[in-house]
Image (cartoon, rainbow, N blue to C red; front, side, top):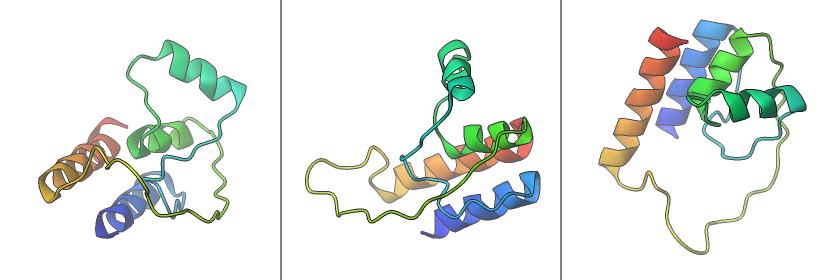
Length: 98
């Protein structure tokens, strides 16, 4: 969770918004953002895009849900090397490109 906390801090510094779980894959978005995702090829539901959308004026609301442990498969970011690459990519995008 250290990487998630680091991303939370950088998003707060760059947008002023507090997102407690920026790496969660769970997102519910409105029609405007669906259109953005459909027509903006460089956007994916990742923390750096979330920060970009907040800067564009989108509102984010987090709702706590109970998540069950993974029962099959593995994360595409499994392993320390993949996790570090992911965190570095997200942080660089939030700080420099958003």
